[in-house]
Image 1 (cartoon, rainbow, N blue to C red):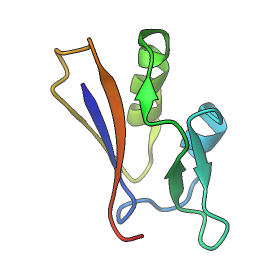
Image 2: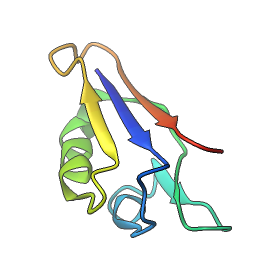
Image 3: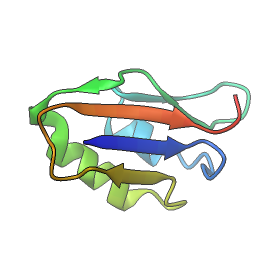
Length: 79
């Protein structure tokens, strides 16, 4: 499974960083999401689904959802 966060879509609401501070933070310059931990364990999977669903900007996309053997989080967009 791959979870992609598009920094171009992020509106800096901070909901992901508040829900999962061990995985996300916000850039100081503009508040846009920044990924702290790219390799996720099975026990955090449900929390990640909640974060994805709660994002007001719909900045997250889940790819290869059936394959949960390896869960990676990828940040895409402008640096």
